[in-house]
Length: 80
Image (cartoon, rainbow, N blue to C red):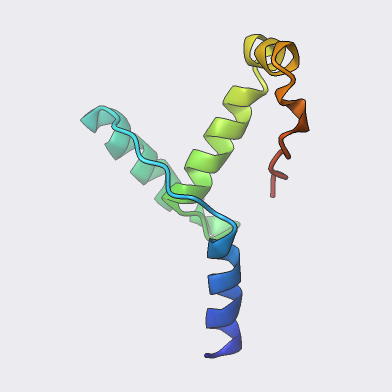
């Protein structure tokens, strides 16, 4: 196994598959913006989904639920 493939395998070991369905127009827009954003970093749909979910969890109403149910002990993902 090459060093690059080993790094990719290690990064994937810490991740879990997440599936969802979105409207077709939102899908087209997300894919287009992701492709345009690749100028400063190599973005992919998984990166976009991770960032969107992290931002969603930061909303005050979700933070209130996290605190109320003591979910703060679950490790947060670091934003890259």
